[in-house]
Image (cartoon, rainbow, N blue to C red):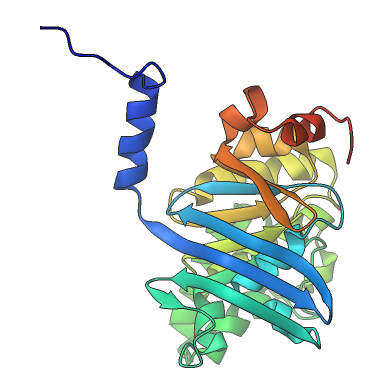
Length: 273
């Protein structure tokens, strides 16, 4: 007897389905809308993010990329007049629930910004700032946190003899890795990155990209980037945003080799953006 197989189902499809079923969701975004006053910036966003994935958010300037990731840790609420509807489920809880304290959320969801923003303190004090806020006072434990975090950000060997120097004495690329280390010090589960290499030189950019590849073994990462080559190199999945909407979301290799929507193809091939 011959068993009919749907022509669109192949071994690769089956493997992808198995991997997806096996992976734990870290975020479920359902029908998310956001307004700045009367202007709608995000429209009916539905996205799932998975553990140990690097997800790239791409799209032209002003399409809602940065607004979206700042919504994931509620930093967007710092802007006056912001309104949202829909839900963002993190660990089974809606982050907009009044019982979900924003401080708890931001402990678990770290953020690295476009430009390095170390505190005007020593390298050491930058790292221990977060742990101290969360109640760690023991100096021996703090020393261990500093070394572990700097090693995690591939910076320890470069600064281990300079820990009490001002963080501004570091190069731009080192400062950005220091900010990543500062993020790791509070042991997040997920790291948001808003164009973290756009202000860096090519050598520093490569170091941060290599670091992301290592970090995804322990963390989930969502990165906003304008750099198509970077998105193709480092991410497992890619979401293309346009005018506040998700036009396409798929495995990165498929987005860049065989996009389903012509607008996606036009963007990644440089016809607009």
